[in-house]
Every structure is written in structure tokens, then in C-alpha cells.
Length: 271
Image (cartoon, rainbow, N blue to C red; front, side):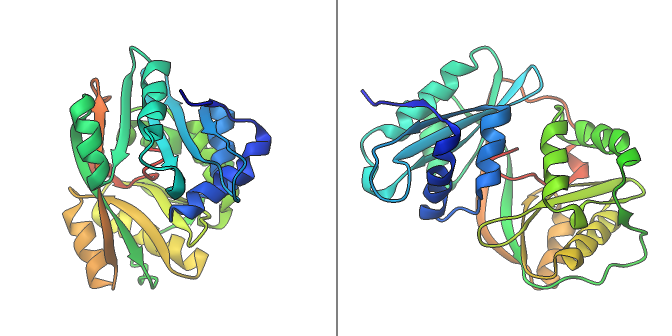
């Protein structure tokens, strides 16, 4: 048995230290969002700078919940902590569709317990900004939110207004819209992360990406679905480097969505 408990605000610095210790890009603001809008469970042993283990569960509307941040400090691995935390997340939202984004090693764990592959995507590092092109891109305004949320709902399949609005507050200079699309970004421990990016076509997506990266003035990371082949080809031509693959997996039916318009995902921890 493990003394796994609900996280409290005082846990957040050590939770951020845990994700840093395992090489992830999250900052304390990400953990704060999980705690405010979802559920977080932790194992605290008081050792070192980081929690011993963690997991988060984030609902997206009434029918879908996202499992993420199933992390174990390296010195606490091979004790069954990840399995215990995953079981908590699965039991906490019984009856809903449960989804997660798995690394290749994680896929071997999640498949045997019932998670089915849905789609694939990859983490990209884009070191330099692209030329924007001819599509008009402008800063997002308060009056744009109804349209932005409607586009995201159609592309992702479930409502997540609080998440998108939190990203816009964190990096407002990268909250941009174009005819038929929008882009948001957030700060990261190692580099900013762009996403989600929803667009009606590849040229609009590329223009939004270029404008967002120019606003951030430096390298960025982004998670791009495998099906966005033309978009990926442009990333590679611009010096982008594919870093690692992920598999989106679920127990239950994923909501209907126009996934072809979802050019950049919010991230493995958010969906």
C-alpha cells in the first residue's frame, strides 16, 4: 500500500521539481491548472527536492477525462507506483471515456489494461521562425473567444475553455487569430510550447505558427499529428527536428472531431 493523497497547493513546487527531474517541460503553472480544474494525486516521502510520484486527471466536458503526469522519481521506480496511480485515475472517472498520450514504452503498459490506440503524433523542435506568408494574422481579442472556442470544440471534440484561456493569459503575445484559425502557446521549463493550433488549411496553420514563434523570439516545441503530413514536411524543410513519437490511446469512444483541422495539439498532458 502507498500513502497516495490529494495534492495541496504546498505540493506544487515539488511537483514541478518532479516533472523537471524526469526531463519534462512543465512549469508550476501547469500543475496549478491541474489542481484547480482537475484532480492530482501525489506520493510525498520528503526526500530530495521532488515528490516521489504523481498523477493527474483533467476532465474535458461531461464525457471525457485526460490522464496525465503519471510520474515517478527515478529512485522510486519499479515499486508499482505508476500502476497504483493509473488505477486511481481509471477508478476516479469510471464510466467516462479515458484518454492519454503514451510514449512507446508507455504504450506497452497501457495496451494490456485496455487502452486502444487512436492516433499518433510527434514532438517537434523548431529552432528558427519561418517567414509568415500572405495569410493575415493578428492578436487575439476578447471578442474572438466565442469563435475560437467553437473552432477548438469542433477540432478537439470536447469543451476546454478554461485551458485555452489560461494559455492566452500565460503568453498573450502568442495568442493570435487568422481567418479560419487560431494559435496559443505557453511557457515551459526548457522552451515555450506552441499549441493548440487550429486552422482551416495548411497555409493558415503555417502562417499562425510563424507569427507565434516570431512573437516568442526563439526555439519552440510543438506536438503535431502524424496525419498533418504537408505541415510536417514544411516543419522539416524549415529545420524542424522530430524528437519523439507519442500514441494517443483511449478506453471508450473518443468524441467526434474534425481532427484534420487540429494541426498542433495542446500537449500530451492536456490533450
